[in-house]
Amino acid sequence: MSRQANRGTESKKMSSELFTLTYGALVTQLCKDYENDEDVNKQLDKIVFSHFLPRGYNIGVRLIEDFLARSNVGRCHDFRETADVIAKVAFKMYLGITPSITNWSPAGDEFSLILENNPLVDFVELPDNHSSLIYSNLLCGVLRGALEMVQMAVEAKFVQDTLKGDGVTEIRMRFIRRIEDNLPAGEE
Image (cartoon, rainbow, N blue to C red; front, side):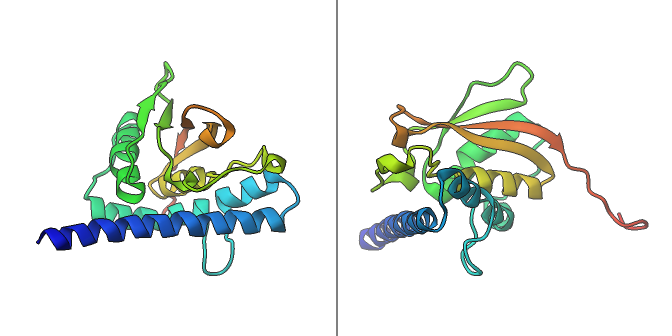
């Protein structure tokens, strides 16, 4: 029994490491394909790398269905509840980490996710000529895409990054608006 439990842990660790290394190869290819880091950052955030490997926003659009099915989480009633689900359930489920939620704005429409350990940057060192690259920008796109699918428009951006010498990785999330469903006339 102990042996089987150990295999499951090893398998998850191998999958995590494989994803991290594969993601690194994708970022490397993007750096070769685009002239500047800003273009690479945009690509990581929102569009498709190839017909088979979606990035950022597109991953979030697809991932939300899996998340809702596997997590049994109901509809969040406010942005604070959404923040808790993102940090305590989604990040734990897909990246094996639980970021802390800090720096709430007085209006309650902005917060920061603090990642003490970002698994996407394992084995990574940014070259000097890519100082403006936001290596893990994929995460911002995933968050935006997933939340849009549950009728929530948000802005997500990196404000600190351990790859750039900061002590932690910080993603700033800002609620923009609730997206209203536009159903055809007669359908509800």
